[in-house]
Image 1 (cartoon, helix red, strand yellow):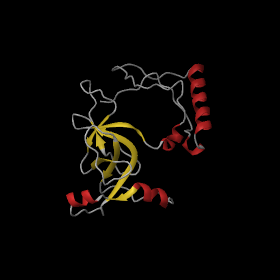
Image 2: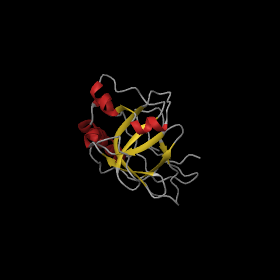
Image 3: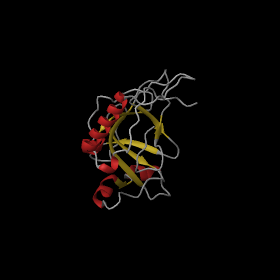
Image 4: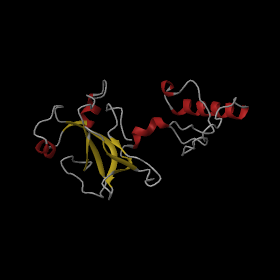
Amino acid sequence: MYGLAETAGFALFVDLTESNSNYREIGVPTHPWNSWIVNTSNVEDMIPPSRVGGILLEDPSLGWGYLNDPARTAQNYIRAPSWLMQIRPTAPYDYRCLKTGDLFYYSPNGTIEYIHQKDVAERRYFGPPHPYGVPTIQYAKKNEEIFASPTMKTRDKATTVLSKLKEALPIFMVPDIAVVLNRNPATT
């Protein structure tokens, strides 16, 4: 799924199964969303399939802007390009679109693939990679116990994670507690 705080839902969706394990593929637009890959310098230029460009999102649930940040609002919440107004002569949401700053391309199967974030400064609050972070999720088997009393080792890990987060993030973004799990349970 691909959705942003600037939207009221998920803009793109893909079913990642064993037959489709491309982690960069974020899918196709969810109704009523539309997405377009455009030139990052000029939204009037659409990008052909297999070329990298910025994504432009269109939807009635799009936010109205950033609180107390008119410059950023003007930069990212834009009026729809002229080609979009020609495609859709009437639009109930005032032809507004969102430029996300993320780079994508259309894959050969027609879905959209994520490349990376154009403005790396936007990632500053995610903090540095942590040695205890695990890039994949391992699901517990049915009836398998997944919680036990914390050991000193897990308490130390949680304390270390929280202290590193306090160094890298504003205090309001640091959780009060950290829970160390050996496995993440799957829900059915």
